[in-house]
Image 1: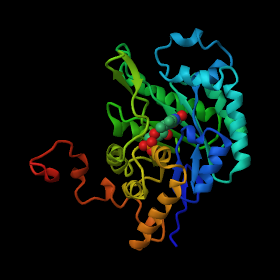
Image 2 (image 1 turned 180 degrees about the horizontal axis):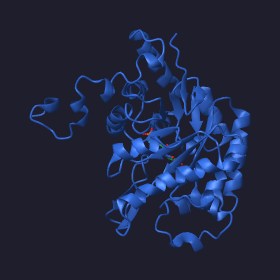
Image 3 (image 1 turned 90 degrees about the horizontal axis):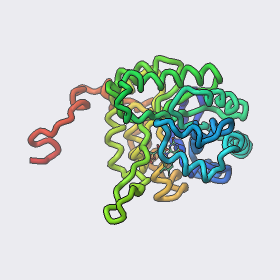
Amino acid sequence: MADLTTKYMGLDLKNPVIAGSSGLTATVDKVKECEAAGAGAVVLKSIFEEQITAAVESIREASGSSYWHPEAEQYIREYGRHHAAEAYVDLIKGVKDAVDIPVIASVHCVSAGAWTEFAHKVELAGADGLELNVYVLPSDPKRDGRENEQVYFDVIEAVKSASSLPLALKIGPSFSSLSRTAVQLSATTLDALVLFNRFYRFDFDIDGLKLVPASYTSSPEEIARPLRWVSILSGQVECDIAATTGVHDGAGVVKQLLAGATAVQVCSTLYLNGVGHLTDILSELTDWMDRHGYSSLDEFRGKMSQDESEDPAAYERVQFMKGTGGVS
Ligand SMILES: Cc1cc2nc3c(=O)[nH]c(=O)nc-3n(C[C@H](O)[C@H](O)[C@H](O)COP(=O)(O)O)c2cc1C
């Protein structure tokens, strides 16, 4: 029987498949369901920086900031404005009492503001780690790239000084120099990079002339972008990588491990196929390892990374050439 154990962010996981942050990890019962289906760990539904701040100041007063998450207001209405931080601490405690797998808390943030002290409360509540979901939408023409990117470094420093929890940073792919920024982030005290978040997106209703949510689930084809970058970055960064977006089955998990990921997060496929699909994903992973004669993850992790490739240029090919992929 293949050994699926791995270490991620310094935590011992019985397997590398993590239930990613979403509504499916927002309550004690849902997390118990993830554990029963075999999840190696869970990342709890994120609390927003704005919710933490709302405990001490009026949410409306602060809404002049242009860096707020667009879906934050709705989320805040649903979860209650003033007690969100306390409720989140209770969620961590409840989940920790109920399950044995590692529990990683999650905060959506856009600044290294006063909210960062909350990391200490997360630690006291018993979380095993903290994932920061940071995204500064580069929509303000007055802020240059360096300013936007500095936020990520400031957040890591502030959170690490408030708590000693293992820390992961979940980022998007849009940096002016992704490799350089990722390598520099990994050289901080960061324990893991999570590549890449799939952000809320909107569509146009062309009859009602209003914004409507676009599909909230990914498709399996969306694995392509994180697969390229996990392959390229796994040989360069100094921290773990968890892959996220577009992993819908065991084959997706195998691909990301071959690319060099330490762990893989799944979300949309659990919305589409039910949380029990985690069990299928794990048995597909085990079957593949058995078929290929691997008894542990380390025997094949990173085997298809750019670092290990005899044709590294293939990982950086971005334009179609005549005949590429059978297209003429
Ligand atoms: C309904 C829904 C809610 C989500 N909520 C969060 C969240 O609170 N925090 C977060 O970091 N990611 C959140 N995500 C993003 C997922 O964790 C994941 O990174 C993304 O969906 C891409 O992975 P997938 O292709 O497996 O779905 C959410 C995704 C969905 C579909």
